[in-house]
Image (cartoon, rainbow, N blue to C red; front, side, top):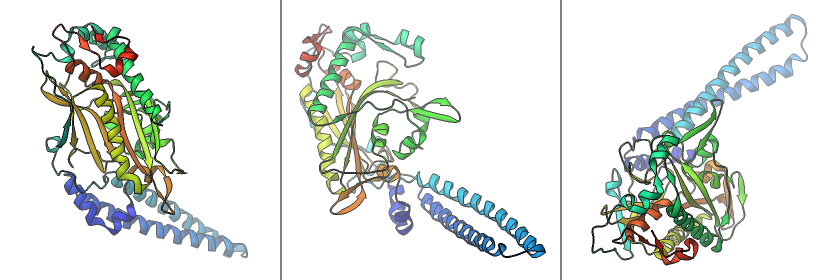
Amino acid sequence: MISLTHLITSPDIYRQELIKRFKDPATVDAIIEVNQKFKLAQAQLELLRQQKNQFNLLVINLQGQEKQAKISEMKLISDQIRVAESNTKIHSTLQNQLLSKIPNLTWEGIPVARNDDGNVEIAQYGTKPRFDFEPLNYYDLPVFKRDYDSVKGVEAAGFRGFYIKGEVAKLQKALFDWTMDRLIAKGFDYIIPPIFVNEEVMNGTGFFPDGRDDCYTVGASDKEFYLPGTSEAALMYYHSHQTVSMIDPIRLTAYTRCFRKEAGSYGKDTKGGMRVNQFEKIETVYLCKPSLSTQTFEAITSIFHESIDMLGLHYHDLEVSSGDISTKNYRQIDIEAWFPAQKVFRELCSSSNCTDYQTRTLGIKCEDNGAIVLAHSLNCTGMTNRTLFAIMEQFQQADGSVIVPEALVKYYGKAILK
């Protein structure tokens, strides 16, 4: 969440941010108005409490009718306090609800555009594959059709349900094992987090309120938990309400099963596993001093680049536009691999700098240049099975087999997927 104090003292900055993101700047004025009402209600409540304390001191020395009159007067004050407390709570709740709609301030170099059509290519990497045959979509390859069973998956789990088995499942395991070994070797702390989390975690990390419709709910209505689409939420919460000690950035990683309703994607990517309701994902999360924020963002992006380079994939980086960037992000780069049969780049990874948007709500602080300040948080996808699909499509052969990237041969045990 952004700083309420900063918004009240510098409202034009946030009005301009909302305009840049194609959102209603009037939300800023609504917050200022509610904040004034909250302060008035709070002042009235404080005054009434002072009056009650004075009555409590005075009534001790009174007797008879005078005492009873004062007690009746105190009851009236108590009733007024309950009303004032209710008003204060109502205004505080509304203030927080409105404040949660204010996005993070974005990087000055972000492209301004209404949607992902305005995302700007930064650079391309690797060699675009060339074929002397017409390449197939990964989901049309014989090996994929053999080992990916959506028919039984739908029977078991509903629309977009699936089973992955056999050699494709083994290659996916090899990809994730290789990635996790690389991250641990680079000094990441490997964490097995809770698979579902509570509302405080989702609100604190900025996934709610915007992402609520895409999130599965478990538990009773009086005690709901959520199945997030990334372990980022649980990893970030691990250091909540702490002042962390660090010289270099704290680096955490988790390999979890993730869940997403894919709300609003009806009819899109119904073949294959690009848009499914459950998927495996390695996530990386970073906490750093604000003074190291920019260089840490460059470092986390380069770690994923290194992985994709080692796999030999052709890909590009996109600077995500103001209308497409997540609410919590200051800057976001999407890394997309080339899918030759589809003749498009498809997203593999998002690398994001959230500055102090998450850490303010979660209360994560650190020392920087001699002062205790809010830490900065960053995150980057470590690996998803979308990378497996890119491998299958880019390295397919005329006979329908797939060349396994050299980096994975040791983990998979074979040089060819067939």
